[in-house]
Structure formats: C-alpha cells, structure tokens
Image (tube, rainbow over all chains, first blue to last red; front, top):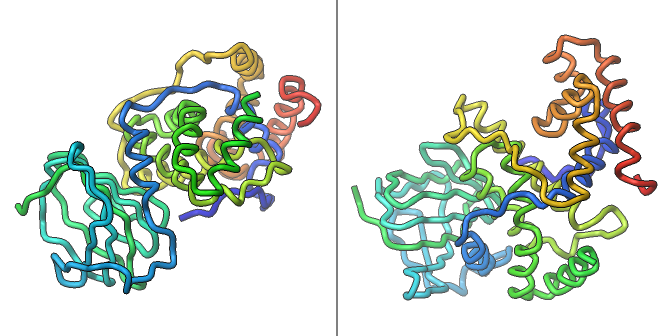
Amino acid sequence: MSPDRDGQPTGEEAPESALLALDELSARDAGLRPRDGLRQELLDLADAPRLPLDTSAYAWEEPFPGIRICEVRSDPSRQMRGCVVWAKPGARTALHRHLGDEVILVLSGGLRDERCSYHANQICRSREGSVHVEEVLPGDDCFCYVVYYGSHEPV
Amino acid sequence: MASAQAAALIRRLTRGDHKALGEFYDLYSGLVNGLAIRILRDRAEAEDTVQEVFVQVWQQAARFDPSRGTPEAWLCTMARTRALDRLRKRSSRREEPEQSHAGSAAPRTEEAIAVRKALDGLPSDQRKALELAYYEGLTQSEIAERLREPLGTVKTRIRTAMIRLRGVLGPSS
C-alpha cells in the first residue's frame, strides 16, 4: 500500500504546500461522526499484537491447511473473539458464511477475497451474512489479527 | 486547547494507553470520517478508512512530530492517503459506491464556515483544480489532462488558489 504522504514533492503532484495546507483546512471542519459501535471495534483491534510475532508463544490450532489461529481475547457478552492468525502463502479457507461481522487487520503479508486484496495495515471487513473465501497472497507468510462478532458456518 | 489536549493524548498513546485511544477517537473521528466520506462517497468504506487511520495512530503515535504540523493535519494526511488508495482500488474494479454522498454536510464550526466560504469564493477553475488534487489525488499532469488545459495553466491555478486561501489559514501557512 502507498506509504504516508510525508510530503516528498515529485514535481508531478500538486505542490506539497498546497496539499498540506488543504489538510489544515480540512482539519477545521468537525466532519461527520461514524456509526456507533465503531469506537468499540477500534478498541478491540487495538489488542492486535505488535510485530515481530513470537510464533512460539501461541497455542495454535489449524482449521485449514496452512492457516493457524489462536484466540487471545474474548468477550462472550458481545460474542467477540480476538484471534491471531498465521497463514502460509497460498493457503485458503473453505467457503463460509459469517453469522456476525468479521474484521481482519492485516499485520504483515497479504490476503485476498472476492472483492480485492488487502495488505499490511489494511482492514478487510466482512458483514454478517456475507459468504466468501480468503486466500493468502503468494510471497510472505501473512499475519493478521481477526476480531469476530459471532461465529461462521461452512457453506 | 484542542491541540494541547491532543498532544497530551498522543503522549499517552505512545505509552500504550487504551483509554487515550478512545478519547483521541472521540476527539477526531468526525474529522477523519468527514474527509473520508468526501473522497469515497461511501459511508461503509469511509468507516473502514477511519479504523485504519486510528489503528495507524495507535501503532505509530511515537512518530508524530509536532514540528511538522498539527495532530489534525497529521490525521487528515493519513485519512486522505488511505481514502485515495481505496478510491484507486475501486476504480480498478470499476465499482461505483453503494451510496452516493457528495459529502455536502454543512460545516459545524465558525471557522469551518469561514474556510468553506473562502473555498467557495475561489474562481471555479481554481477550486476545481484544487479539488481534483486533494479529493482525487490527481497529479498536476492528470488534472491538466482531465480539464484539457495546459500543465502550466493548472500549476498557476493551484498556486494562485493557495495564495488566495492564505488569508484564511493565517500567517503560519
């Protein structure tokens, strides 16, 4: 994914000063609040481990070949489970339906589903009722932090 | 006052203070969401962008350098970068947003109203060039091609627009 635009002018882009000034202008607008519930989801995602991961510190299960998962947080009152996932390049889940929302924060590597691909520090959200397969991109191992709000079932 | 509060929160974030993350979100989620909606015109994608930005804040709070700008501008830069990435991905999939939202919510503060007035007061050609650069991430060459204008003309319009807006931003700009 594109790095932060820290402001290295390339000559082709609008002047850095113009873009930064517009950032300042945008900053003065109070904007529109997101939906309720996003705040708690953010706090749930903040439990994601920092890299590098010590893979020996987790009690892994392997629900699909090449995909290991370890639950590290839970809040049964909200049906919330936070899980660390370690997946090998090319590994795939089976087709499944989500019975609650799933939010994947990619920590390193990448994965894709029917919609698009997701890389480090990007979020892949699957809504309740959605059906998909996730596949790890070729190259490096993929580490994710996944927050489930409900379970899922095979299709 | 908001900046002092934000600076204190950022210091707490660097120490891994979860509560500070919630407070920082309360302070700035509207700002980030509003900008993301204006670029993406899709509330769901905008909210994913909001989460990505605040996760990045959580992970990289120690990198914030107050000498380079305000916390607000730092957030807007991150939000715009991520929103534009999503916009380009969507364009390559040739998808249209599920909801059409022009991001035309009325600004909520006196200062924001003044800023909006200043932007609206720009000649339409200058405002259009600025909007294409800022909200669609186009380079000046791409803007020139889109508007079918010479590159030099586009550069002049953006430069002139910023000179006109300088009065709104104040002497620090």
